[in-house]
Image (tube, rainbow, N blue to C red; front, top):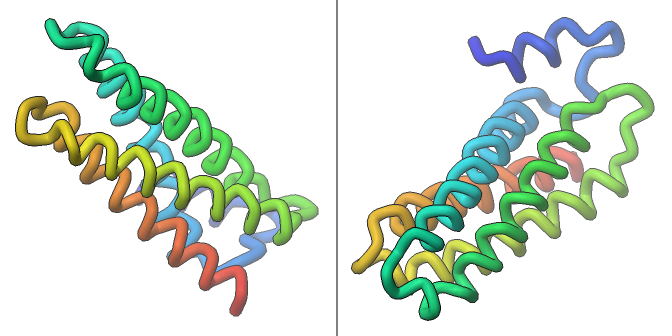
Length: 135
């Protein structure tokens, strides 16, 4: 059992939406934020850092958006579905953009390959959470 699941189950008001997609999205956002932060840092350590500037920027933006999305989704008291929908849409877009950028470098940089995978997973989890909000 994850902490996200435990915390949602312990909430006195329960979860505002289906817990399965919500938990998956929270965990994917946490993983993606960490992967993007680490990828940006690894890019800074590469000899060809000048060719990775756009990748660094997209990774940092994606990490911030994923972290924000996780925090918004973790708050269940007086849950605002419209706000959640907005951050989920932004997160899916950030993950799509970052994943595509990291994929461009994946053949040369292992950290970009890993980051692209985390972004793809998070984008899917955001899409699933958006569907759960609509239900």
